[in-house]
Image (cartoon, rainbow, N blue to C red; front, side, top):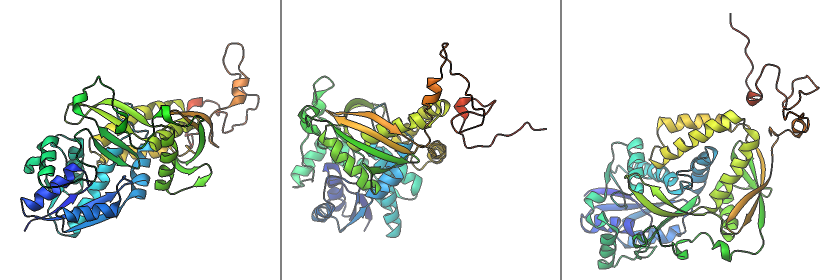
Length: 406
């Protein structure tokens, strides 16, 4: 009997995938649920997977790993896809692939599967990451599972076999969430003109219905990594969850866009990322006062490439690791605190400070009538004043200057 490990979410497509492999192909199916802070309860999902045909269900708590090693790496890189997408789903796929391939090898299983549509980003990203980690494994895709050829057929199959996914069987939308955010595929009949219904959002309240007073919070960073909220040091997943809850109450983090998908088609997507939105804004504000002009400009270009690479399933590529090396160097002095105001769906930076701040009020106050800063009267080199012959934008690099070579 063939054995297969299914990456299980409890949604419509993964439920149909699991049931089909067991009921129609007669395979021995084991489900794997990777807990990344989804809305569902892991224990209930495990019971549900067994009820619809799985012989067993693995539950892996990867919330801290996800935030620390995946989401926070993207945060340090300032990775945003197409100006608005904070990559919550794209960051989850490589970690899910890593867990699935590890379990497949441990149990001597040659097949893995993911319930997803034939042209979905989920499937493309999963396949790319599995191939990078374990090219010997065979992926059972929607081509071998007819009900996954379209969402309508998946719905029909679910109703015929009494499958009731955790997310329900509504054709209006699909909802994929984790601690870094949620993505929503709206009813295709809406097209691009009609407004999305408010019920597509689950992590945030409507900005118009939020509190009448703003809320303030302070985020502390160390080398580009968020460490504390309002002075309280928290584990990565607890910190993200705390900001998610507070920003979600103020309606922060909603966005709707027309997205270029990997299959070469455009799709209308809604995203919710309250915590990630706040952290991205705070991190950017801290970089503005700690990084020089040239580094900021190069990092902006590389941030887009980083986001595109992750979106396309290149997390485990040598290029991503090389780009991380560049990012880590840029973050050596991105430490300090940022104070933010949350109100009616917006997040605003109201204050920032860092021991490595390049902002110098003394230099600004010594500007002469021409608008150029006067030379400092103290000629001794300091952290704020550049040594003679060194361009101000390159000072404080941490590197020792070399003399001319003979």
